Length: 206
Image: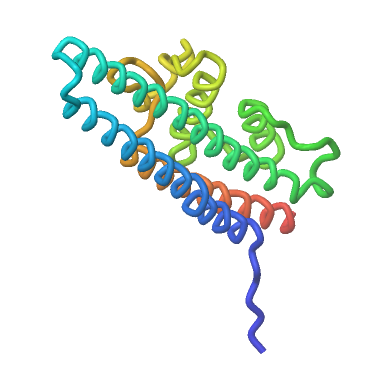
């Protein structure tokens, strides 16, 4: 009989990658479409309403455009929070899996403390993993979106590629950028799973 070794770390990484596809992406895209459709209808009505003179029409269209932009900023804030929480919980779950063997305290919640834990306990340099920069950008975008009304913090401006800034300088998303983030985060959690698998195998051999 051939025994197939089940690797829980790789399985967990695969599940988290699927979760990014089946939660963050469809939730955002559905809400984004509704906002875009509503904006399109309202703008069309404003352009075609005969009762408005050109000054009022221009004012109404500008107001609708600004409202639509702010609605998208709010949607982006929710999406950043969902992405950040998904990756954060994944990283903490992996630490928790080996809690009985390596540690006695619960896994930390802050990203920088989680990184220190991986390095000290398993020798894994999280900052060197594929697309760690995306993780950091999502975390800092989430912080700015929730705590500074959608404006980027100094940390975000100094420590990221600033991919989330829209034309008005707010933290925002497009469907295309979200697709990029999701794919990069999936690669990050997959590589982290591989690193944890190898680290635990080394520990068993020692």
